[in-house]
Image (tube, helix red, strand yellow):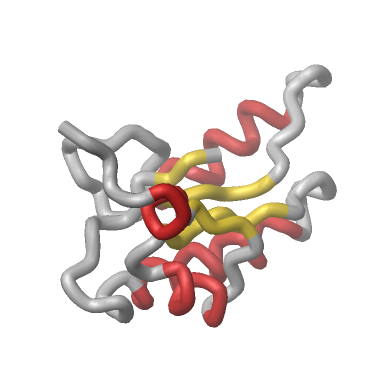
Length: 105
């Protein structure tokens, strides 16, 4: 489940205040299993800039993990901030730029 944790208008995802209701609505769908939470916070200037978002994501993950038995993934962190994300509980990071280099325009 993608959260728009920073409420950026250019990004998709459920807002934090809508997450509980959305998970409740999905819980009655037998074929839908939410496996965890994912966020793409703003592009950081410094590696620790997104740490507050990562902390909030971990708190939400822990809160809803009790009611969602399939929750196992907390996906947050990219090439510029993955170390802070891992320190705050991420178990999935997206580091394509660090591995493959920046995309060409």
